[in-house]
Image (cartoon, rainbow, N blue to C red; front, side):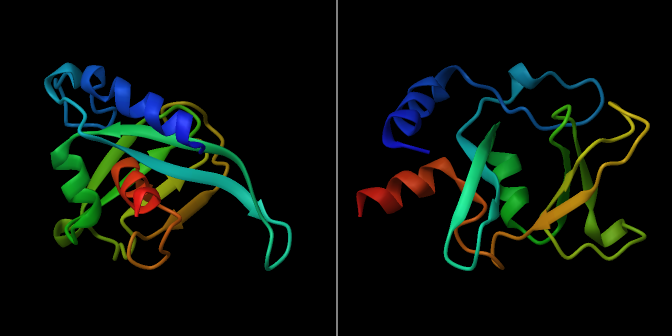
Length: 140
């Protein structure tokens, strides 16, 4: 993401609302966005060259940003239809180690599961970032 794209997103932040799930009956207009989650999608050409085909940018509120960096919640996010579901780790049947699980297809958008991708904020520095962190890093 270049500097102009970052500036454009930051300029729109005041009018953006969190796009993550806040439970049944909630309206995303009730959750103003404070930052953007930026996730590059791409592949490694070799060990040195990394190709980012596109970047997924999701506005998030302060509560969701805290949940994504905390140890109690895992976010299941479908990048085909942009739906999201939270899993509370202490009550989950499965042991979730990651903060974010990306789904290619989910029950809401397809009857065919396309894959599961995962990453961790602490485990892979620089791959999952909030836009504010990217801007602060670039300014330093």
